[in-house]
Image (cartoon, rainbow, N blue to C red; front, side, top):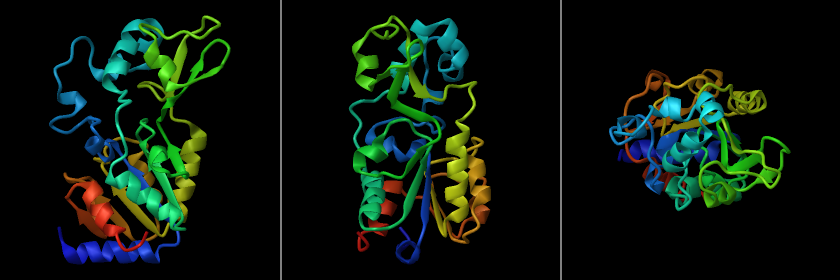
Length: 245
């Protein structure tokens, strides 16, 4: 790892008055949750039945809920996962008094588990579930404890509060994300290929001048970055905040 680049990252974090972190599936791979597009990701696995985009779509959920939940539990839910160094590093910065806003594309809740409070979940959360009939809130455990299609006490289907393929993102969360990015003086992007929109488009709203990309493979936004790291994101961030927390 480039010691000079790491020292610069640490200094920028110290100097930052408003830091925003945009993270993708790669932030949770070290917690045992597979990403989508890497060589070991979901899209590269030989899966039975429809492709992930279809199996986890709103259309599939509505028309074949039993099959949807079989794939949902098997592909996206990892209750055994725990925060890794990246999650703890960001939570530690917030606890130290830094203004840190996390924008995550993940639904695993690991940032909150580590202690972060300013988290914008643009794809929702597997830990929030609700009855489509009476709107009663249910935990993730309620979905995992039942076989087949999880049902509310009223008989309605319990659906996860996540954005499925074919659904629009929550406008309120997107607007809050744009505001956080536009007001930040330091933006760190990690664990994402930056090819999925509208999440990738959030980078266009950053005007702070210090853009850091931490990803093991190139991204379409590398030419805009002030710093680029190709190492594991947990290692970079853990070392980057070592003398700050």
